[in-house]
Length: 242
Image (spheres, rainbow, N blue to C red):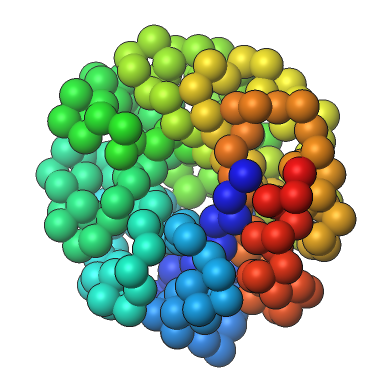
């Protein structure tokens, strides 16, 4: 199981939101490129980058920051935020994204998802951002009427094989993962998924690594790494031991 350190972008800065609330933001001193270099130097093999401004506005706004991160590291970058048009996916790929994350579009635009899978194949990742069992959209600011499990089934039907499952109520809280949700989602997903939300300790990572969930292949961690709750190297080791 792999560690995906998260670098969330807002206004060109490295930030973290609590529970997806744009009014409850934590800013970090390290620039996005500096944060990325630090994670990779400490053992990260892949990076998760989110354009929070783009997620809310509907189009990517920080491709220049993505390009600066790409120039700073030599590991794969998973990138999302505002990718709702095929040309935006192409632009993100050109700026350095190896994997392209569809969030709002995954819920609202099945035709785009199918086209994206046709063009980019396994590079497409669908983000299922869940609140109270239902998928959220528009940078987590709007709730849809589609159950997370139904969304996953629908996306699998058009060829999506990789997912991110985010427990919004846990995200940025350091209060621990939503283990019951992880177990439930693992039974639905036929491909593979990453979990995000609430990781605050190495024990949280060990709990996830110990689950009997073969489809869970990685964990996204943001705030705990940025605030030095544990090191990237220790997190990588904790997940590998499961």
